[in-house]
View 1: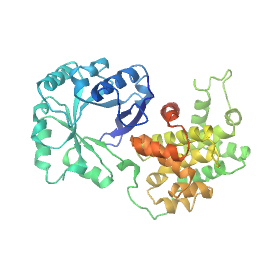
View 2 (view 1 turned 180 degrees about the vertical axis):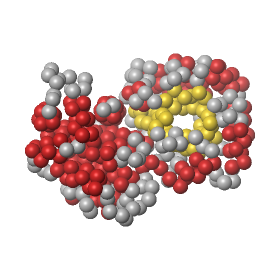
View 3 (view 1 turned 30 degrees about the horizontal axis):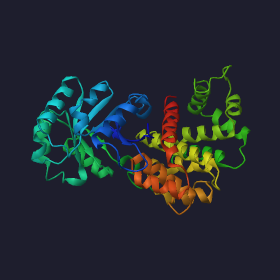
View 4 (view 1 turned 180 degrees about the horizontal axis):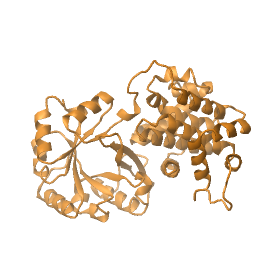
Length: 404
């Protein structure tokens, strides 16, 4: 079987909590399959990957939204899953003939949620509207104000509305006010507002802790004191070190023991993630998930390929890539107060260089921008075929951390 590329896009509820992920697929280093029909390729791709590799590895146990073309639908491929695992998305370009309508009714009768993808209020989708539970509306294609009447009618019919391509908080708020219940897009990864007031003491302390672990020479005594003064970090560190992920023979009982056991690189990663999570405690959890996955993904690439910067720098670039959204400020202003090396700061400001290219590769992959990801992999002279494995490993690593 060929290498399978899977990325995911978060879907939020009205409280900006994760409801599920749309999974994006590709099965070759090029965006087409030469030897077999495209619909059949989709069927084989899904049945040969997600049915073999636990779907929860990609979704953390949340709902998976999966697009189905006509052939997989009429062949009832969705029935190979459990209704609690997936929401069946019907692609917008499918002509809803009788075969498709009958298949959709059969799928819904088995307890699956059916969603119409990229619904544009055009008549050709009408036969599927009564069957669908959820309607996905691309905000880049409509004017919410002008379509409020038709939006309200769908809500009165009992349809759950999901807004796609939500790229700013103002778009999120407009969609929420219009009656949308779920939201997909990168609004969560942008600052809500630019604050000029001084940072609270708690945030200053967290940034000071991150200063300690950012130094080239790690002071274990100073780090021990910092961690010991913070109950939350101490608890999570001991829980992490005693988890099944590490499988220690003897339970670790002190902060100093945990620091020594983890070693310099791992303790830097752990504290950076914990501190970042505390900085973002009033933000969508997905900010930390994406930051952590980017960080680990970049680090895995750096560990296997020949770059001038070290793996720790690649990790740091990924981790701090959303600090502007976390701190509600510009990246330029935030970096003035962070003791990060010049190459890391330049990468976060999207200047040229291998750190920047690797970060952009991670961002392209997570969005399912396969052409951009391939071009960046070639630019970095890395094997594109390793990316799916690194991405899944990064997701698994983040999932273990998020369970603390």
